[in-house]
Image (tube, rainbow, N blue to C red; front, side, top):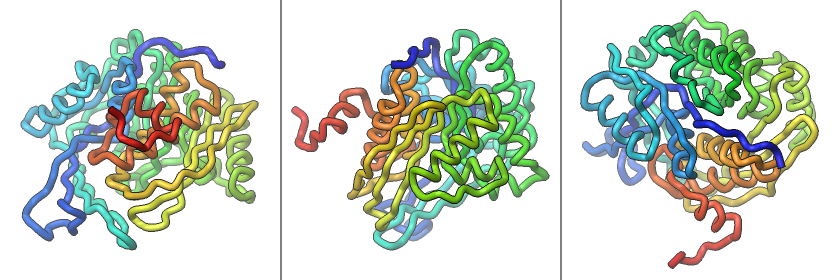
Length: 340
């Protein structure tokens, strides 16, 4: 078993308000929308808090009902939000129409000019915000939002390395966000991955940064990509990913994989049917992998726990995983009967 990681988990990224069409309708089909609070990094913070970890969210929101409400929702899940700043701008939004059958889900983003994207990099005092932290979690969405956010993400990772705080990075490549400004995603992502201890990404994410394709199939291709990433980034120790095969909007087959420098673990595929909400499933996977890692688990434990959380998330409305260790244990035991 690997050595457990101590200290709280600090997550840095944008908080978003999600507005969803009801009952799998199309957007604007009827004059009603349901509201959830999310954001890739906040989802990880909430997922880990529900698994018993001390977590903190660092972000910026407007000082209005939307910003205060988003903070209250995240804080209500046990996440420390004292590092979230109020700033000029607006709340980032996105709109979701949940798919059905052979119709895929659709998302419309409305986040330009948000308080988070507008916040200058020096808004955040990283030496203070990372005091007592054991791990910093970032995603590729943050640097894609614009030059301020890109510099803030780099500043956070640089401070973490100087302070001896481990860095977890989820690639989350969003081409449309990067293309909306004069950006150099390969350079920024390469620097962030170069400071990461843990990377969430598959062979396509690694190929994007390294500027090459991987020719194998399945597990062989993922190991080839992992070996290339380990060679290019000497500080990187763990790479975690999922493989998803979509049958239709209601049934997906999912497997999880974790590579370390000297080992690998890949689960069998699990058929996830009767899907309620797949948004945030990747963040639930990250929370599960980090949960096992923080407790000193090996590659197999990380893969199995990540798979459990991502599969369970498909059963839950909203962006974040709210499951506890007992839920993970029940999933792994195959218990589907009512728990009394």
